[in-house]
Structures are given as C-alpha cells and as structure tokens.
Amino acid sequence: MTITTLLLVLLSAVFVNNFVFAKFLGTCPYLGCSKDTSSATGMGLAVIFVMTMTSAVCWAVYHFFLYPSTANVLYLVFGSAQAAAADSAYIKTHFDLTFLSTLSFILVIAALVQFVEMVIQKVSPALYSALGIYLPLITTNCAVLAVAILNIDGMMLHGTQLGYGHSGSLLFALMNGFGGGVGFTVALLLMSGIRERLDLGDVPRPLRGMPIAFITAGLLAISFMGFLGLVK
Amino acid sequence: MTTQLKELTKGLWEQNPIFVIALGLCPTLAVTTSVRNAIGMGVSTIFVLVLSNVLISAVRTIVPDKIRIPCYIVIIAFLVTVVDLVLAAYFPDISKAIGLFIKLIVVNCIILGRAEAFAAKNNPWRSMLDGIGMGIGFLIALLMVSGIREVLGANKLFGYVVFPGWRPIGVMVLAPGAFLTLGLLLGWKRLSELKH
Image 1: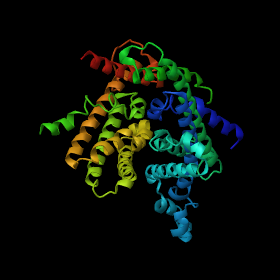
Image 2: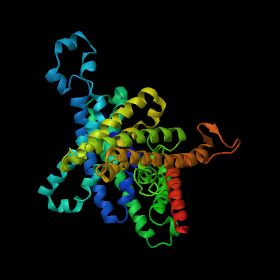
Image 3: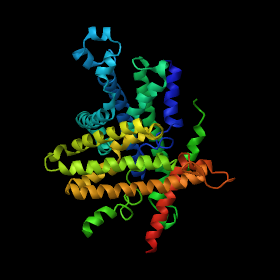
Image 4: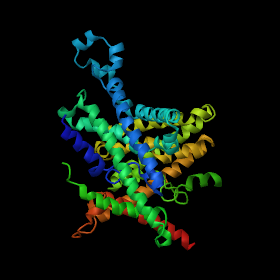
C-alpha cells in the first residue's frame, strides 16, 4: 500500500464520503452539539480520538478473534494444525465468528470509551474538563460503530489489493477512522458557525430550532456534493 | 383499557419518535431514498423495538442498576444480528441497499431511549404496546419522507412511474434532499401545532 493510496483514503473520508453529509452518520450529535462553536470543538476532538482508537481496536478484535484465519487466537489455542492441513475448509467451518461482529464491536466501543474517559481523567485533568462531558455521548454515536463496520466492508471491497491479512489493512482502518472523525469535525464546526449567526436572524416561527438546522444542513450537503469526483 | 390504548397510540403521532422527540434521525435520512427500503427499515426496527422492550421489561428486576445499559445493549445487539442475518438471507437486495443501517439499529436512540424511559419501568405487556406504537410511528415518518423523496426525486413510487413525461428533481434522492425534506416536514408539523 502506497502513501498515495493512504492519502486518497484520508481525503475521501474527510470530504467526498463525509460521514454527515454523504453517509448520514452521526446526525443526532451533529444537530445536538452544533449550537455553539466551543462545544462543537470539544465534541469534534473527542470523536476524532475515539474513532481512530475504535478503528484500531476493532480491527484487532476482528482480525485475531472473529475472522477465520491462521492468525485467529481461538484457532491457535483450540484448533488442530493436522486437521487444518487435512481439510482446507477446517478453519472456516470451525472458527468463523464474523456473525458476532456487530455485537462485539459495540461492546468494545462501550468499554473503550469508558476506559479512555478514566485514563484522560487520571492523566490530563485539563483535557478531561474539555472533553469529559462529550465522551459518554460518543458510545451511541452511530458514526463510531459505522466506521468499525465500514472498515471491514472496505477491506473486503478492495479484495486482493487490500484483503485481510494484508499489512495495509490496519493502516487503511486507521486512516479511514481518523479521516471520518476529521470530516465529522469539519461538518460540526461549519454548522456551529452558521447556527450562531442564525440565532440573530429572523427565522419564521415554525422553522425555528430543529427545522432550520435541517434545511441548513441540506444546503451544506449540496455544497459538499461539489467534492464528488475528486477521488475516484 | 383506555390507558392501554393510549400506550399504543401515543407513539403514532402525538409523541412520534422522529417528528416530536427527534430521535433516530440517521436511518430516517439514509434509507428513505425509496419506499421499499423505508418499509424494510421500518419493519426491522419494529421487530427489534418490540422484542427488546419486552425482554428488557422482563429482566428489569433481575439486572443490577449499575450495569443495566450494557445489558440492554447486549439484548439489542443480539436481536439486531438476528434481523440482519434474516434480511441477508431472504431479502438480499434490501440488505445490500440498507445493510449498514440495519446493523446500526444497535445504536438507534429510539430503541435505547424507549428501553430506558419506558421498558425499565413498566411490565412486559405495556412495554410491548409502547414498542408497537413507537415502531409504527417511526414507520409512518419513514414512509412520509421516503414517499416525498421517491416521487420528487425519481418520479416513482414502489418503482412505478407516477407522472409520465415529468423530469424528476434529481437532488431529492441525493443527500441534500433528505435534509431538506425532513426539515420542511418538521416545520409543517410545528406549524399545525402553532395554529391550535
């Protein structure tokens, strides 16, 4: 995997396939936390951090526990190499736990967020006071679970070039997670800037609050469509 | 009986999860490109919501308070995996179009919100009624958004042409159309309430 591919993955995750505008992921925190710029910054940084961590940890869980391969820990502990040598489908029929991916990812994310919160609280109280209240909210941010699932699908889609067991698949997951988080933050900051000004505007009464936020998001999404075709 | 009926009907319109409580917006925006996808999503959500409400309400006295949320999530994730595999087996085209969002029902705020706000405090029968009502309310909202988007954006309904010879507004089936439609629908609901 070359640097160019990695940069393309990053660029496309930030702009072209923006999590909010192109994939509709994380819409609830996007509308809930974009009322002012300071909370948008805090939420955005927390999301970047958690999404990158999640990508790495879920990659490891999928790679070493769920996906049937010779690197699967359960196979290494309980499997028999003779049976695998005799029957080429042995690992696949006995150690394929991929159907558990959604369940294990959400548990991993919930535990990870809790853990990160405790570590930050201990190590850096300043950072904790900035991000603290946003971290628990992230567990239910669907963008985080989605990036873990999309990383797997993305690696499948790239097939031979980026297939499982390829050393680049972890890098791909990290780039996708980091880029997705950055894209979410860009969307959140843009929106919070606009909404701070919207408060001063004369919006028709039925449209105040949520409805005008949606219409604003629609107009922003139109402008983000301009990035289509930037990355093939 | 009347209070039980109220548990069922309150979610349909008065406390509609999308239009009033504004929960579960991601799937509402993402899967409403066609009415068919919206029905697939709505029915899957109803299944998960009803069963999770019943199961959570049944175990509400056994589960310690401190670890209730992880327990709820495990129950919900189990039900979602069932739906995901059933859809992939019997409706592969729907599964291909909205599969990611079926998996994301796990983190749908409606499900966990109803578990925490209703099922954890009420008996299984009432929780079931609440789940059915809220689920149908969600389906109604999905149908409204997807109906508008499919007619305006593709000039089709269930795949059949609606106005022959009319050129559809392509942007309505793309991402911006979802935000615009939902924003205007929310505004319309607000307008009808302000008049009363």
